[in-house]
Amino acid sequence: MMPLRSSRFASVLEYTHDFESAPQAAEDKYFEFNNIVVTTRGSWQFHGVSGKTEVGTDVVTAGAEGLRYGCRHHRDCGDSNLVAALRPTALDPSYGRIFEKQLLPARGSLALLRRAVALTNDDHFDSLVFMLFDEISRTSASSSRVAPRGLRMQRAKRFIELHAFERITVADIASVLGLSPFTFLREFREVIGKTPYAYLLELRLERAKVLLAQTGESVLSVGNQVGFDELAHFSSFFKKSTGYSPSSFRALRE
Image 1 (cartoon, one colour):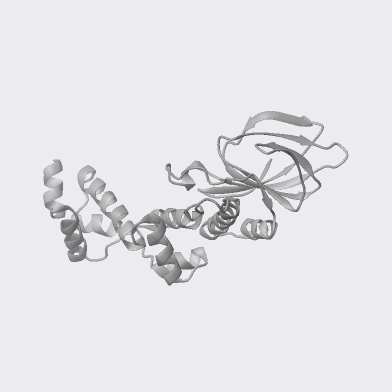
Image 2 (cartoon, helix red, strand yellow):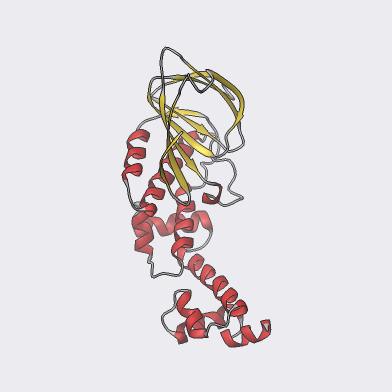
């Protein structure tokens, strides 16, 4: 496989089957990551939970991490594919399996992946890949079951974690996700159970505790490092959250 674009949370690779160096058939393999395979040329045979199916450019293959699969490639019909993969750190450990079905209509998957690969900004790249996984995950859910939690909100959490100590706003996060601030706030609260700002403050608080306990940085410096411009604002927030002033908290840890 040839890597086309990678970030901290996602990768897109190109795979063209080579009969000179790769076997025609492979069985009892396991998906190492959650991935989506979009065939760009030719066709191949996928061996999944529903049996053997011919996969062409009109179908995407959704692979859930840890699931067994097999494949067979045709010597007289070489195939090329784009593979989008989410790294393990992209999702909360408790998120669970994101695909219920393995074969789904391709629709605009190829165009979306090509847009993602062309981006130079990692945040925008991640967002498009998460968008693809979210759409395929939702399509994969059977009508008899509740649709899976939005993967876009997992992306929102990762974005907040990466930028928690910077000046970011709800509008910034919503823009990266391609949502209006209102829609983003509603979905985040429904999926995560708290507001984006509350989640941001939790991250800042935990980082501040570590810095106060493990470094000799001044309280002002600690506040600045976790995203607070004013000492009074940081001290008030910290005391309200922990019951201790930053200095008192540090003294308890010494």
